[in-house]
Length: 209
Image (cartoon, rainbow, N blue to C red; front, side):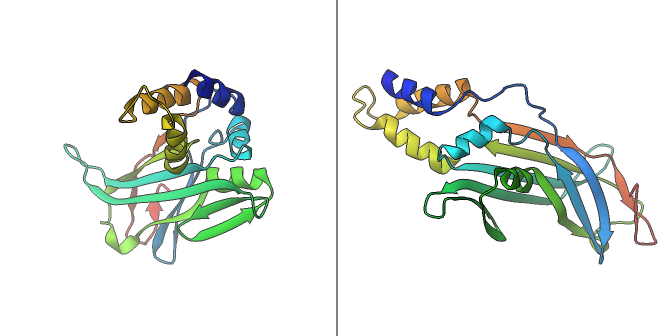
């Protein structure tokens, strides 16, 4: 087991732990009767994270977006979305593959991977007609970067459990892997933002824009 831990320490570089964990709001716009959101996360994929991709590990980014109506005692949830991006190096194509619900993209450029995963542009939130005029709303955004996706994590867990006579149920091996992932900075990383309040005006615009 210790030998496997040392091998993974050599394979994966230690990732920086001082990254900016904020989501940056860019804009909220109205177009064709709908509200669209733009934001970015500048430190989502740093150089060390990209190096992990180069080593063949599948990573994943999960965007969790919630629209709330502002109330004094209890703010009800109006809409909720999950948007995932899976990234890995395609050995057959010799390019990076980015898979989303609406796209399967190949690129040889790591900078394209960084841009596509860290910048969300014109994400549809809701139709104006579904919001009440002159009522306050706000958005909460949580982005999770998984350097080791669930798929890769399970594969690594299988490696750890192989011929491991100290563990019969896999729990001990899983604990070793969890500890290692955190030590190397390969644990999940959370980025978050709560926007300011906005409201729909009678002329079909939002304030503030």
